[in-house]
Length: 183
Image 1 (cartoon, one colour):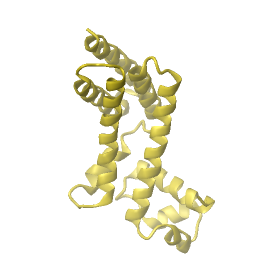
Image 2: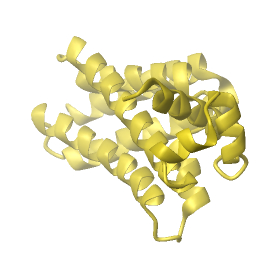
Image 3: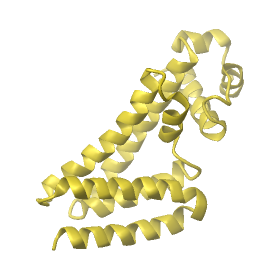
Image 4: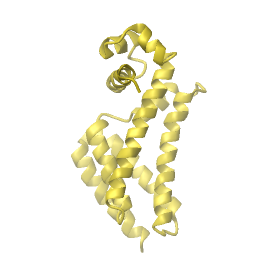
C-alpha cells in the first residue's frame, strides 16, 4: 500500500472515530492526510468506499490483535480473548465501537458498510464458538453467545467506567462463565 493511501486511511479512521461518519467530510480528510484531492479519488471512488476501507483495515488490526494474544496463551483462550479485547478497547476504542456506529449510521441502506460492520460482529461470535469447540465444551454455542455479550457489554461500558475498570469486571465475569461451562 502506498504511503499516501495509508495516510488517508489513518486520518479518516481517526476523524470518523472522533466525529462520526456523517460528521466528517472528504475535505477535512484531505486536509488532515495532507494529500491532494485527486490523490484521495485515485484511491477511493467515494466516501462510502473510504469508509469500507477504514472498517476493513480496523477489523484486520483487531483480528491480528486478538489472534496474537490468544496464540501467546493458548491454554486459556477465552480469558486471552477477553484480555485482548479489553486491551484493544484501551488502546483503540475507549470511546465507543466504530462498527456499531457504522451499523447505526448506515442501517437499512442496503450497502457494503453495514454488511462489513455486521460481519465483524458475526465473526466475533463464530471465533468464540470455534474456541468453545476446540476446548470440547458441550454447549459451546451458548458460551460463545455469552462471551460475545460480555465483550460487547465491556465495549459499551468502557466509555462510562474506563477501560481498566471494565477490564477487571470483564475478566471476573469471564471466569464465572468458564467455571459454569466446565461444571
